[in-house]
Image (cartoon, rainbow, N blue to C red):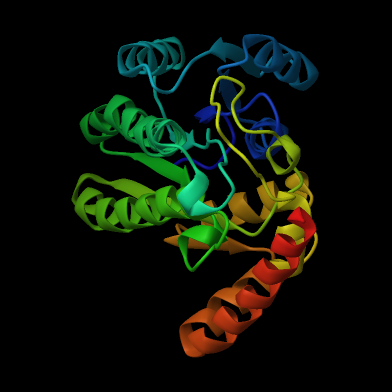
Length: 275
């Protein structure tokens, strides 16, 4: 595997947040980055801030054909594809019984379907070149319970399972697979409302406040990106950050009842704010 110097990385959801921070960190290490985002203007602004090593790509990750075309273009332009970061995603929060079916389907289509489309676009290229690294963004919510975030947690558990399974399968072809599982990171998603075209969402909790109660204050995106790249360099299967997130993960495995009890208290407090 290459180091970051002169490598080629394709990153989705790169117009802001974790994706943008990853792109900045890779470019600072001498790599070339393709910043893909459904918001083309955000991708352009992020790429412009990085400079000559960055290329903006407008992409809806739900469009499998467009995804494949953009990834193949990047590989052809650079002669190789070393990394793909399937990072694009959305959050849906609320009481599970109140969340409309349309919202559940939307988050599946973007978070799970978008990741699958990225793998389908990049994995065959990497198998052919017998090298490459697929990095999928999940969440601490993919390693344990996340009440009031059930749709999000569901999709992130799926990404963790997919990544761990594909990692073993891909090893024979020289392709690596890792999954990122951060606690809350300082990104626009923390304060984002539900998708504007999804109606009938009677209540959405304050996600920033709720996640802070569960796992501490949001972690700076640039610090998470640095930890993520160190984990990728080590070919770690599961990259959990920051340190307090690893503590929550370990505690959930050793004493799940304690985590459940703490979560019940946080849920009760957030429900009280609804009144």
